[in-house]
Amino acid sequence: MKKITFLFLLISAFAFSQQSALDQKINSIIKDKKATVGISVLGFENGFTYHKNGNKKLPMQSVFKFHIAATVLDNVDKGKLSLDQKVSLNTSNLLENTWSPLRDKYPNGNVEVPLSEILEFTLAKSDNNGCDILLKLLGGTQTVQKFMDSKGVKGFQIKYNEEVMHKDWNAQYENYSTTASAVDVLKKFYDGKLLSKKSTDYLMKVMLSTSTGINKLIEQLPKNTPVARKTGASGKNNSGLTGAENEIAIVTLPNGKHYAIAVFVSNSTETAEVNCKMISDISKTAWDYFNK
Image 1: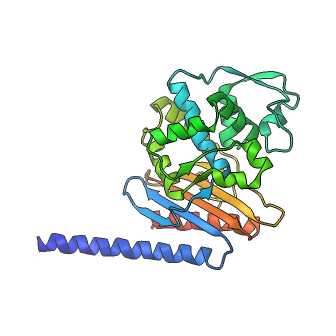
Image 2: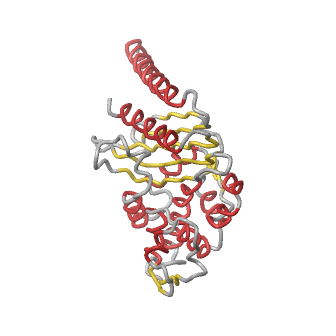
C-alpha cells in the first residue's frame, strides 16, 4: 500500500513539475505584453488541463462561427434544415466592405447555392456575409445561445451578428467566451455530444480545411499536422487597440491522441505581428509539452 501511495505521489510531483515548466514558458511568452491573454489547453485522452485567465470573458470575433455552424448542423440533424437546400445570394446579403470570399466568388449575386457551400465558406474561410446568412436562417443569435445552453456550454454569450459588429466596435464584447468554455465545447464536439456522427464528421472535415490565420496556432507545428480550427480577429480601432486576435483548435498528435487549445488575445496595443506570434509561440509550447 505504501509503495502504491509513494508511486502516486511521485507521478503527481512529476506532473506538477511538468505543468510548472509549461506555465513558466507561457509566462515568458506573454510577459510585458500590453494585452490580456486567455489560454486553455485540454488533453482529451489524459485529461490534462492548463488555464491562464481561462475564465475571463473575452470577445470571440469569428471564433463564434464554430458555434453557429454547429447550431446549423443541429438543425440539419433535426430535419429543420438541409445541407442541400438552396440559398439565394443577392446584393442584400452580399454586403460590401466586409471579409467575404463568397462575395468575391459571386460578385453579382443573383445565384442560388447549397447551404453546405455557405457553411463551408463561413467556417473554413471565415466569411462574414456567409455567417449572417446562416444566422438569418437560424432565426438569429438567440437560437445559437439556446443550443449551446442546452449542451451545458458555460461562459459563452452571443448577441450580435457580423454586420452589427462592423458598425459598433463595442458590440464584439457582447459576443464573448472564456477559453475554458472554448476547449470544453471542442471536447463535447469531438466526443459526439453536440451533433450526430455524420454531422460531427462533416464539421471536423470542414474545420480541418480552414485556410485563415496560418501565422497563428499552426505556424510552428510540423507540416501536415491535422488541426481542426477556427480563427477570429477584430483588426484595430482608431486608437490602435486590437479587440481580439483568437484561435481555437483540436490538434491530433503523432501518437493519434488529441488536445484542444484556445488562445484569445484581447485589448492589445501590440502590433498584429506580436499578437499572432504570441499565439504561435503558445501553440508550439503546448505541442512540445504533449510530445515530450
